[in-house]
Image 1 (cartoon, rainbow, N blue to C red):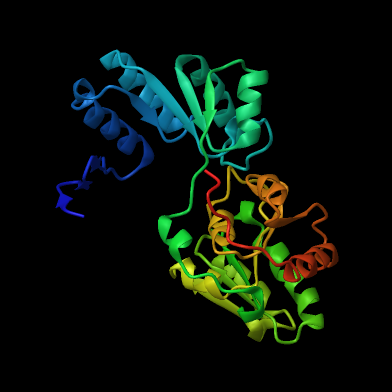
Image 2 (image 1 turned 60 degrees about the vertical axis):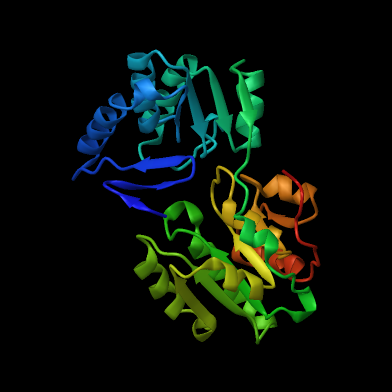
Length: 292
């Protein structure tokens, strides 16, 4: 894409970045940048109903423009989202709620509560995988490697430590099985130390910031044991490739289960997860197509 000063441009899309050494500076610069553009737009939308929502709301007030909020984290689901400063940010989202003309949420539980509890105009529009996941050739379950793949940020809410412990149990019955963790984050060193202590340490691979597509194409199961997901794009990418999904009952998990693409985990003890992993291991699914 053609680069421009402080961002880039594509047909119909103009991206600008605010910069700044710390959060307050970035939000202030973002607001100043928006003030210079607000007269040229018809709608102001925010990527979240939290701090960015405040900036978007202030810009909408300044320019007298309609204000839409987006909810990518299931904020209105009314469960612990495991966001930093969750209680304060939950209050912030409730403060902004009446100021938004409409809310777009990726989370079906948030959508139902926005309608039934908050009585607010909302629509559900989940995040779809990139087109290349739909265009990738389908590989049957019999042709796939004995590989479990997790694509996730290495942060506490993803609970990678549970997957590592469960894989050790699962690996005893599957001596050829391997686990690949694709992603990076603040817990990487701690998770690598945990993996080295496991009896199956040599069968655990770290993909870092690799492109997830080649890993998922080889996978027999995709596993994600998050405490909470707004939606779960990586799970949807796996389903688009025809990879069975093992997931907790959050985000797109129940929706994928209805489509026959996922096996859900309710008990997160290592042995119970390993049993659920066995069930997903033996699933055979077709690529998820034409569902949006």
